[in-house]
Image 1 (cartoon, rainbow, N blue to C red):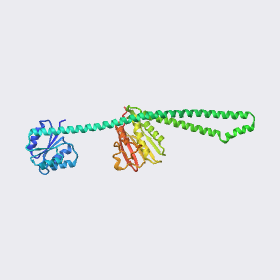
Image 2: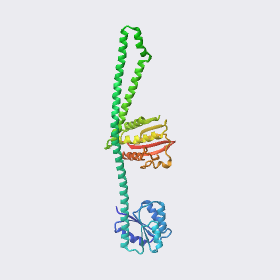
Image 3: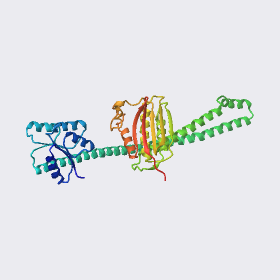
Image 4: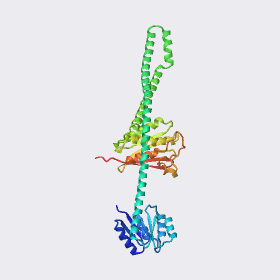
Length: 403
């Protein structure tokens, strides 16, 4: 696309000449007869370069540029045109942000050369800014990939170490259950043998401890405890499996899926590790699918729920609400932990931002930033709201249109 140049001059002859010679260089030219016209033109579209005459009625060039600077931030270069050649005016022009100063009467070749130079400088500056932005994004992505790789490696080691004792616990429960059955049978056979011996005194002595301790109730209690322990060990194994699946993989494949089950898994993890008596509310009205990765959904909700669990009181409340509306899926993660101060709400998704004191145990302030990035990759949005001391992390995702 050819560069856009705005020329501002109250002299029709100057406008005609500048318009002609710059059009010959294939620039797109706009003209204004005074400062007010120039400002109105800028409101419609910013140029790539501004040629601005100083000596104009009502609003001179200095006043015009000062008004432009006041109204909005801009990055286009400004070249002043003037018959004034004193040092004071030139200094004033540069103080206002001009990049060059061309004296009248001007040389056609000089104007072309100076315009070309400033447009080239602007292109190079924009390219550097763009490259710096891309470099920062690449660095951030690299750091995230390194973090996930390290987390995946650590998760694999932890799950491997935990799986062994979990297996021992499960095997031990099975063995104790079998031994309890054998012990019950042993007591019953022993009692029957004593009874058949025909010694009432001995029979009473053997049976009395059994009656006194309510053997059947004790056996039932032990059996129930073993069953609960067995269920707990299975649940721990399931959680470890979820963590291993979510963090040990390096490939992240997105597909149309219903995220409800993964959200429930993340909540189950938080429930298991929390030591608080938190009231959890889960309402997932999700019937259609979104484009997502189970690993990424798990990571987002595990992070949001972990943050919520940390800030609520010992008997606090956490809610997860999901509903479909206008071809979109809305999901809220809410907690009654007091909300976030308004002055820092705008910063909570920034990388490395944290309100926690820096300790070895504290996070690095990347959690919410990563969550926002993941949600964006899933073509969704994540934002924060605070209502009556409640924190609401709100998300929306486009639903997959069914054929």
